Length: 78
Image (cartoon, rainbow, N blue to C red; front, side, top):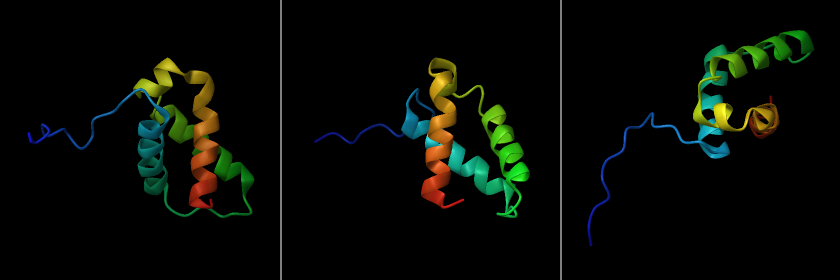
């Protein structure tokens, strides 16, 4: 059996899973937010979405980006 070729760790694909992984990494770089401050959370969310605007999924499915981001935050319990 052949061994699959090595792929770069930061390779991105035009799908929600790839976007979700990139979102999680970007969100973790923000650090802790005050859970009571919904304005800070919204600003951080918009900042991460903007930072990932060149991701292949964001380019091909811009209408789904916010939904994926909100889903990832629920998974992260943020």
